[in-house]
Length: 522
Image (cartoon, rainbow, N blue to C red):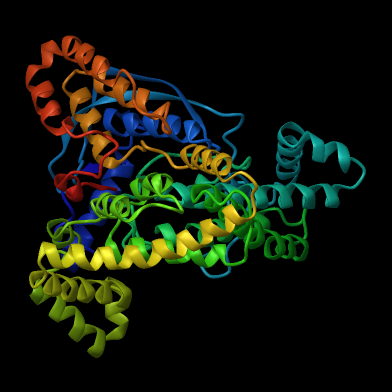
């Protein structure tokens, strides 16, 4: 996972010469591949796998992160300017690292490409591997269907389908984006696995792409449920003939969407403190909340966290204070200008628009209509922002949030009417909300601060961030003491510590600083 501090120069589109240059670099990378991980990507994986565990989301763990003085050459920005980086090893811990893709090594030749798995026609190995997976990691299924292999395999596929649906529902509810959801990054036991260009969403955007090299948005936030279902379909294909496709496809269609929607709504009810009643209108309330977040560019994590301090009978003066605090978690005009900054040179955009009309076949090789439309949208939004004042934006945002909060208040009122003791209900509501809405997540800028310090020999910030992530739902007691200890330990890296403290002054539970908008991970 190359950690980039600035976006690519050409955005989605590029010239044929740069395409060729990129292909050459990819070929060189494969030719010179050494299989070694470096410090920055290792710290990201180490911190995030532990963060996910303490959020209660199924995941591989990180036992240790060990670096060395050995160096490898990495072209971090893919711009022909490589540098030496420290070799580092992360000790991953999981019950198994078998993935969906492990079963694709038996794939027969593709009818269009001719590509095939390296163990094609070795059905004996596939049977052994499937037997091992079920007997070892799904023993209750093995015991229940020991005399019927097809039923056993169907029960296994049903269970991994439901586990995967619940897993991605958990991701969606904390704003986690994996970044590279191919079949080789899907665990056969339903864990979050392979932390590369991941990212926790800051400003809510349903089309958020955490991986800067995902030009088509295949793994965007709102595509994750769909792509995980697609990957399960590929697993189903890989299990033929041990599990006939007509059986697995029926299971997938009947189970996946229903399990995802059920788990997602259950989790969202907890995040909103709807602990007494389960109403059909709740799904709409959640959708309208997310739409309001999108319209106001609200911080996904912080807005959910703040909602526990909203009450049914809040008085007008406190309501205005709450509204002020809520809108402070929405993006400023300056932030929005960065968000909607065009990524293409105007001349390049004109050329692409003409090419889309005159030569669609060639255009399809170097660009997409979705990419062009996204760029045109950026230009339009930036133009509107030039005319927008901070006061206008605040007034508009307050209007959106007043409208949704009134709907939320009405829904909470229905909760109170169904209980005998409203005070006890409210205490439990706040407790449930505070145990489902994290105060701390691993935002990219937090990881970057830790990486920069570590690359200069000061690992105290990594330990400090880990301490926060181990208690994501709590106030960070003792944080100041940890920072003071860190300064003593990092005395030999004075310049790094000085730079680190400049960036660390705002609490890690606050909305990201402006410079964080420039971070890009690929």
